[in-house]
Image (cartoon, rainbow, N blue to C red; front, side, top):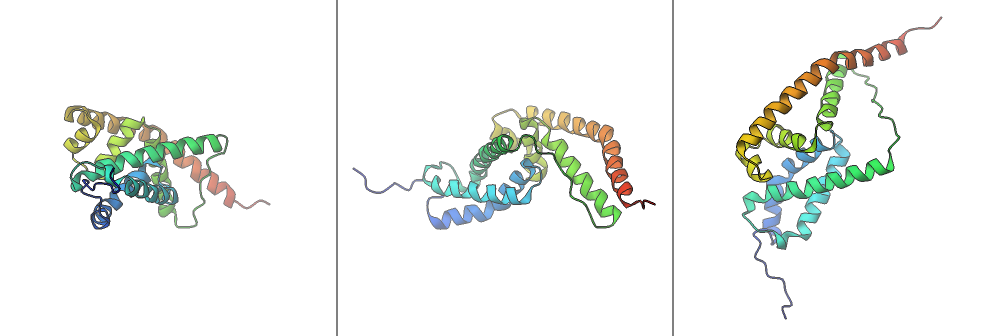
Length: 194
């Protein structure tokens, strides 16, 4: 009978886990931030939970320390999905409200465009959203994404191209209507009433 766990994992020691954390913490946060639609508090909480779960399971990790990002992204993805399902059950009928901006018009426009783009990305199917996030937010190469997802590089490239075309089309058809509606609403709130 063994009383102690064998430490075969390259990230089993506190020092090696800390090094892995320092190397991957920003990438994990960015990944979660994009998946959650740009909600910083949620992303921070889920990133912390990702590393807590990784710490608890560090003895089970098999692979090189440099490749641990794929393992961490898998943990993060499951946490984001669980959180999404929990929130959907808890708040199905709550309306989405936009925060009022008290900054100059250009800053407000930029903020609204960012929110709108994050909503467009959030509306994508999960596989397309993940490929976009890995490629453009985490700067992964196509071959790394393909290996992580277990698909061909061509599949990743074609998916990226089609998804970007779809996003561009949705942006063009909805952007002007969406933003003008927001600013028309703001202008009417500033009009004086006799």
